[in-house]
Image 1 (cartoon, rainbow, N blue to C red):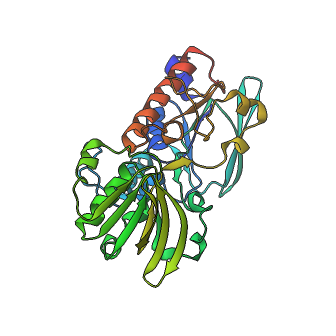
Image 2 (image 1 turned 90 degrees about the horizontal axis):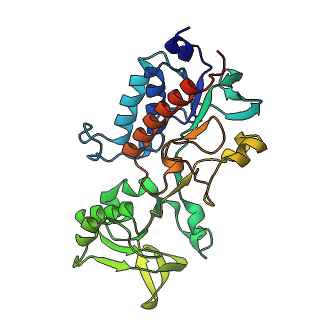
Length: 333
């Protein structure tokens, strides 16, 4: 049997997560002669791309494409190839039997038990939402329509700009949200809980803007409903003050999706490396510390999570798996 024939006859490589990292990994695994099996809990591929409805000019060749448009293009590419894709997966489980990885996947058609040559975790992240405000007295008394989290803060900007918006967050998304509200004619209070960490070019455009206030090392101590919206008691180095606003936008980042620990037997999980926030720690090859387990995309990249880096990591991990299997023993041969 030739090397190429051996790779084709290997057990599948399970890729968990059909966002940009997972789809890129599946494509590269297929092109490298392996058998990717892509699964996701969601009903459609794309991950957080589906929540980004703004035209994006950061992905080369995808001029002014929205997240859903790019996700649809990526999914159509995979659909043109003989790659197994299961969406709407309830859960999955990974156990080790000797040197083999045994996988169970609860698909919409029933449970599938399958030995796998490797497992790639590309489960991505989710928006940090209401739980970040859970300890603030009065938050539950505010109308839900007046509080937006993550990508939802970029919807209905014309309506949001008809008054003052308090934005909690100090990163690029929070500052970009402030810019868009100002351009629409609104007024903004931008509140960073520590220091602003957004791009210098973005921050410089806010300096001397008459309709924006920038507060660092600030926090919301209490919120009370008012006829026009809400009154926020805000603590900062300048003291304690009350600020009235019509809306509150929360753009405080992301956290890893789901409880991955529940999907692995104790011995496999203990061999994997992860930080206190739940992000997977990988080496320069994308290996997680447990033999046969890899990760790609935002789930292991808290420093620079984005579509481009996720796709790159997905492709890199596919190449590493092909190399590891070629130099070692492929399950199912």
